[in-house]
Image 1 (cartoon, rainbow, N blue to C red):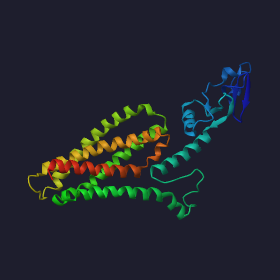
Image 2 (cartoon, helix red, strand yellow):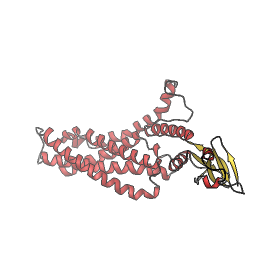
Image 3 (cartoon, rainbow, N blue to C red):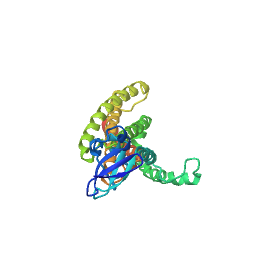
Image 4 (cartoon, one colour):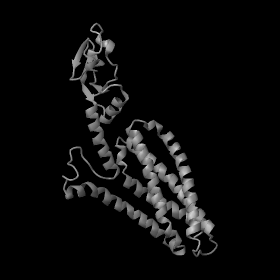
Length: 299
């Protein structure tokens, strides 16, 4: 057998020049000279040169070596991927994912925060901000379509921010967990049904707790409010609690499925930015809120 040497490690190849095993050179000093190289070499699964860098990092993390052999389509050695390189890749990918999740455009060779000009910072952020502001108009249209209900029961406006904020937080939490699990290789697209079912159970428990809290909030904070017709404080609290429960349920499922959908479209799951999820969930939350409250309260 032959071997291809690196500074601290070698890839042992067979008679056809294909990768066979990995040898860390310090092992040569720890074993008898009579031993064959194959007896002390590590059977490390190689990574194809065409794989994504994040995949190579995960494979290196799962190995018991500081080096990951890189091979071409024929199995011939191309090089070694080391922990120092992996840490640099993880830092770059982490920065990119954080920027994507917050709706900020980024590139691998961009300067540091202080070295970047104000105009460049504006250029990186303004597209998402303008786009989401345009989408946010739908929230105003929904509120306007229910202005009669708000006029008839102004207390509904008091709890609108709670519904919107809770849904945005629930959706962002769910999306963050799924994006992280996808990045670590803990989830595959084939697990989507399991993910949705698990998130539904999680959201149900969280939603029930928040619904109970919101019901008590209405009972105590709005006890002196004047309610028209046959609407009671208990009925109002029940309507708001139900709307909040459904909002948490839908927001959590949306936050979990959007990264999976992005992955299926061969996009970075982190592109499902937190501001985008919040804006989208705000719209669905307002629809749920006004539909539930107006239906149950008969206004």
